[in-house]
Length: 419
Image (cartoon, rainbow, N blue to C red; front, side, top):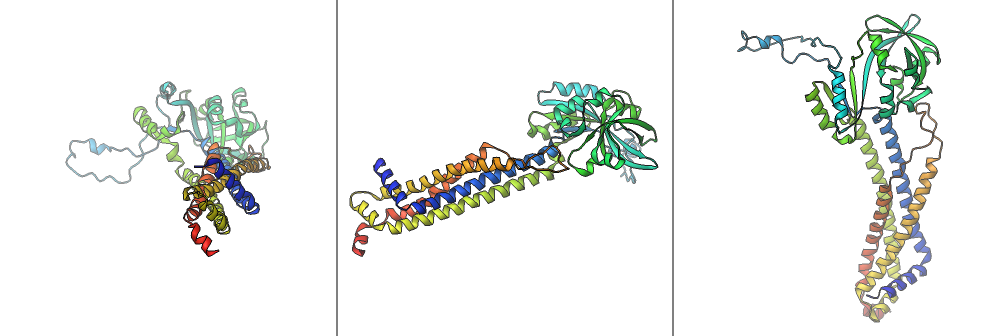
């Protein structure tokens, strides 16, 4: 095949219809630009929402669930062994929320090669005292260093420092919603009441804002030792063990293993956030569907332009075939034209898509519920650019293939006779 000659003829046909060529390339450029921008923005939005929920959620959580006793005392009686047992109004078994042997469990987890980190936690239901008014709340007793390392706790402390919890005895970081209701400032002292009726004074050293308004009205944070002091429990008292893994996909399997080995309830992140993950998948699917639709529309534009070019260049095609060019050569000419449009338009689209994404990423995003987010989120995943480049080539190839088949089957004798 006369590669150089075919390339020269293709370029001649492209420049002869320069305006149509520019229109076709512009269609591809616009489609790729919007495809990249849309996926980058939606990817960034999904990352933002994922981080908002998943970064604050352990991959596996160990805890004790209050459940009825599975085997009732009557089942252990030999006297009624052959009888049917009808037990109504079964009460939960009398057990504490404390995880037994929590120290040994934490040590064992830290030695597990699948575990990136472990953070013990106490959840203490309390009431915030505002004069004669009591507001329900939850204090999370945490290991501050572990929370900062595994759950980026400091990023959500909008006023004050998380380290003050360790340095100042009997201190608390209030949820921003609870703080606004109580009209307190950093340095103020508040009173809380436990479910058993005990009162405990705490000093406010910071405000916490997760971005979930209802949660910020209820939850607050203190150190693990302070929460144990509030409850009047020993230093070994732990109600939750939060586990971060190196591979999040192993969470369901490891949750089952930890449940059987440690004898505590275990829930994995996929189960705990199933609806949230479904929403992210749907948003991503919609983004891909819209972007690919844009590329297909651009492909139809190239197809129509090449069809018109073939109709207008019947004489040239007849001369080419009469002078020894085969149908395969003519086919190659028009596919080369289509791929040139696709490559040029696709390359420009990738550049403009990156530029538009960067521009969107600089637009200020001010939201009181998301104080850590300053601009619109953008995900510069190379996968988006690779998909856009490959799809632009495939679309333009198919757009050129069918008109080129038509051109390759033209009989030069019929054209000359018709003229």
